Length: 41
Image (cartoon, rainbow, N blue to C red; front, side, top):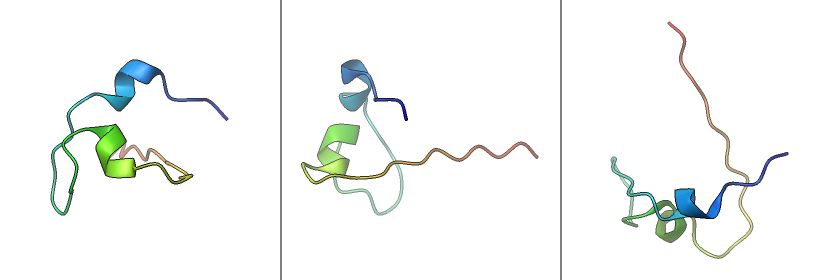
């Protein structure tokens, strides 16, 4: 498992039903499993 670099946590996020303005604000302080899915179609 890889750790997310610190600079990525401060990257702005946009999308529906998001409450935070950065990835760190959206995820919060609780332990979280973050999975990235990529659509190749």
